[in-house]
Structures are given as C-alpha cells and as structure tokens.
Image (cartoon, rainbow, N blue to C red; front, side):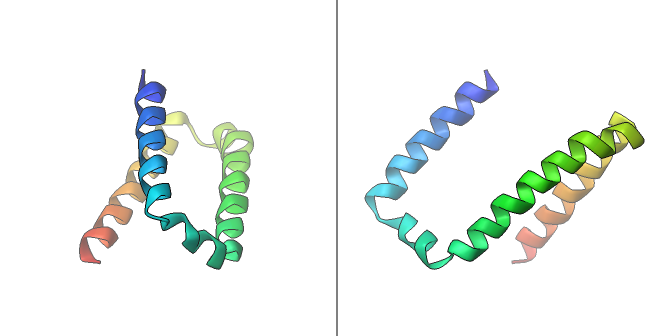
Length: 78
C-alpha cells in the first residue's frame, strides 16, 4: 500500500515538474546527480551486506532516526 501511494505521488510530481521544465537543472548538475546515485547504491550495498551482520536491527533503526532528526533540524534552520 505504501509503495502504491509513493508511486502515485511520484508520478504526479514528475508530470507537474516536467510541464514547467524544472528537470532542466539536472543537465547542469550531472556530476552531482551521478555522485548521489553512486553513493546511494554504495550505501545500500554496505548497509545491507555489512551493517546488518554487525549491528542489530534496532541499532540501525536508531541510527536512521538520528540521521532523519539531524536532517530535519538542518532543513528547519535553512
């Protein structure tokens, strides 16, 4: 159900931003975009293959909560 809601939201957002040409900025930021894609894939691989074997699931969850709280605080200050 969550995936269905997320996918629908992303499709509508994609359609809206495509109409006002907001995606043109991606052409200017190709290097940054590729860096983000690579880091996301690397983080997913390392997290799934290494961290889950060393750190219990509750610890990973607390780490995620901490990262989200820090990100929210930085966004609020921005």
